[in-house]
Amino acid sequence: VQLQASGGGLVQAGGSLRVACRVSGYNFRILSAGWYRQAPGKQRELVAVITSGGSTNYADSVKGRFGISRDNIRNMVYLQMNSLKPEDTAVYYCNTAVSTRTYWGQGTLVTVSS
Image 1 (cartoon, rainbow, N blue to C red):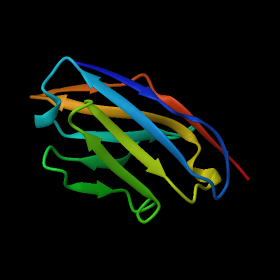
Image 2: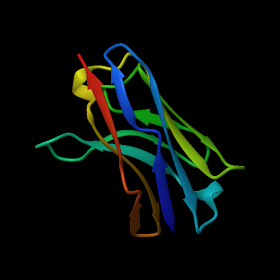
Image 3: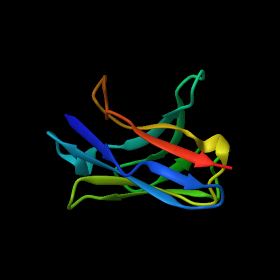
Image 4: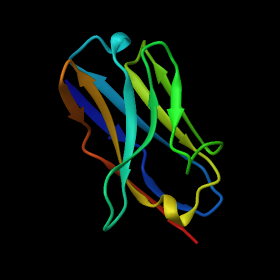
């Protein structure tokens, strides 16, 4: 299973950005997928997750601002980030799991300037 993340960049506080992740090497339709982030000096944390059926769950810190979605035709998972804050600055990683094994994308940097 391979994950390729893209779409990070620099944005001003209050702005929006969408990051994307392409999942290959497995039947994406049956996988859950998620986005994690790791800020400098902090541990990696869960941001959002979407199940194969489309159910979603979010960290409290991003609820109402971020939206996770998936495209089972293109094998893509997206994270739409709105009303961005400087504290959202981090490397964002996409993630999935098959059986007991976890797979990660390479990460994409999101920087929110104040």
